[in-house]
Image (cartoon, rainbow, N blue to C red; front, top):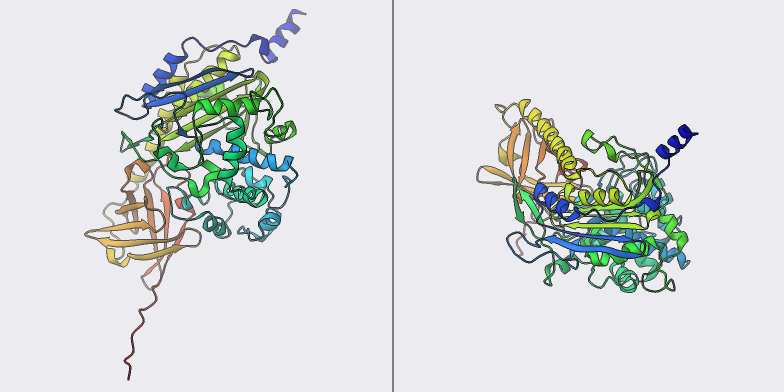
Length: 529
């Protein structure tokens, strides 16, 4: 009998009755993480059983300034915006204005994907669950870095983006279809996504400081300045706009506001402070959003993070799903240049955690999450700072090794096939549009026509391959630029790919295929007799 009891103790998840309180050394742990990962400011909120048990800031809003981060400091929450888009659709489903499995073309008749079959069959649900067949981050260069494309232009360009896999066969994270989801919300409700979210979600929930426009981060005093490393040196950078794909990543919020959002989510749509009388969405829609929609591959973590190995992973409607120590986790991360966010919910424990930072370093958002989860699950304490630092160091070393191998195989004595001016001109990709190459002094300069931040000098690598060194070094996204020649010796194609494997996937250079654009000859004025 004792052996049976021992087995039960080993295999049953820890009961919520054994849940602990916040770890006493949490503040010290966060300060250590900030120092280790070189992050100026952090904000953290924890909610439990319908109450806020912690909401505070650490560090400073801007490097070199004394103004502190507080629980009301605004940060860009990036892809944590996706859960708000899903909630907006859920509310419209509750109202009978659409169904999750409605075809997109029934609401947006002009919508078109590359494959006519996908165009015809893609549903509202498909817009949120990363299984359309698009590749990882496909089309992100249309709005990242900040571009001048309009929402309608971006949606219309979807028809030119080739799929990477067959329809509904594989998980590949994308942002662009969330813009289409925002267009469905606009068509069905008569309100633009940003107005719908502000009026129908922020206001009733009490998220008084949150906003849906990037320019809101440039006004007001209590705003965290984004930071990034440029050639290894931490500096402030301008907030990058995402307004032309707002439903994917444009929300700005504070941990005080996100506390109310988490309480609403954990209460299955009941708005806090209304004694259960007001709902944002129904309990049925809550379950739908937290149900596995797309199966994700469970990856094996590195040795330092072995305790984080999941038994299942899936994507719901605007939420990522996995398990940890016998509990289901519902969460999401978000990253933009200079901002990183994490929201994690444990429905079974009534527990929610939100972390916001003003530097895009993974360790500083992950350490508070797993430290707090371990405490409330009664698990042994783990030095998560050391674990994530070891994991990051290993990833960086591997990436540096791969780049070093490329350099070793390089033929630096090789020369371009053509004089530099012969590569110059205008080039066009079917979905992005135009870029230009100009000869300036002894360099070629590459400019993306609709993305002001993508300007860089080409440095010869070998043969007909160059490296674009972007003038904005905080992008950390240098890219190979390779030319193919036609039989007549002129340039036929130009392709790109990131140099480092650590380049953010939203720099989807590898999906571009540029061909030269022949300028129409200037009209010649004829003499008038």
